[in-house]
View 1 (tube, rainbow, N blue to C red):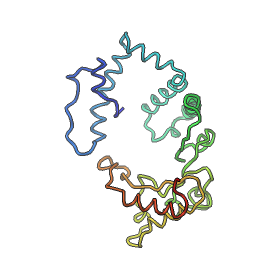
View 2 (spheres, helix red, strand yellow):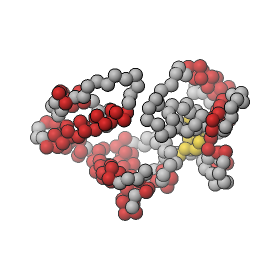
View 3 (cartoon, helix red, strand yellow):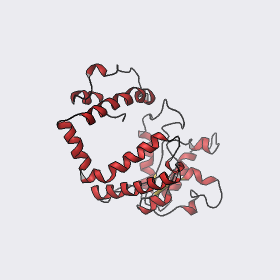
View 4 (cartoon, rainbow, N blue to C red):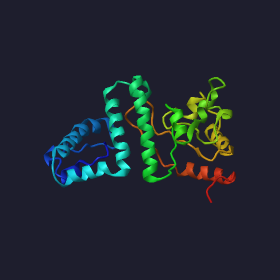
Length: 245
């Protein structure tokens, strides 16, 4: 919703020019402020489009009937309506009847995606429903930093990794290696972990850069020039025969 252009909605006649908000003067995007301003403005043209008659309304109906869309659109709308009405963190906290219906809807969504665009590569974080991920054949994720604790069933321990997993040094939101391991100064421990991952025989690894601080809404998703780090990573990959030809 945040990426929908209000100016384009004005061109389509669904929003009046005097309804546009004043430009925000900021060096970085303030997502919460943008959402507060845009969400009610998006609702207006949506209602106007539904109540209208004409070319745009016909385009909407044709879009909804398109085979690549109709297979998942209603289920997705159903999911969003429930999600917006319940005060839960994830869908697996929904009441059982709704949770079961949601799982069916997600199976239908994946089925529609594969039928529309063919067999595509999807990687899923193992956060909620691992069974759903395995049924659709999507590789999961393991995080190297999370393999230093827990019991023997910890899925992030090296001996519990699966062959169809993407292995990450960490996530974009968890703490840096130095802070996560409570290390103040010990050479290049971050690069040591990356080298360990490079040596593993898994087909895919992700070497993460922290871009945001969890549970914060400001000052995130930005980073400085990473060319020196990129050069060093390319050298490590080439040394171990992992670089693309």
